[in-house]
Image (tube, rainbow, N blue to C red):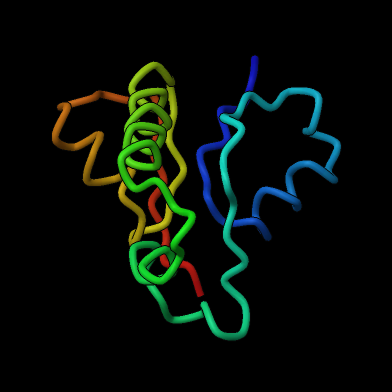
Length: 104
């Protein structure tokens, strides 16, 4: 069994990469965001809005690829504010296990 880690949150990604689960992880190599300090209350689009080096087209393609990977999974754990929940609901995906929680 493996864990497909679909997150742009650097803190969550680092938590998993430094855990005993790191050898079971499958993930997409992508830019990750530190949501602390200035980014704490911002949406991902707001964070990238002032990045002149950002290629919004490629970022969108990569984001969709990450979300599409979730459709191949048997289970889903996600926070209520992430795009994954909306995406998989729109695809009418049925999971063996699903847990959606509030990130506090």
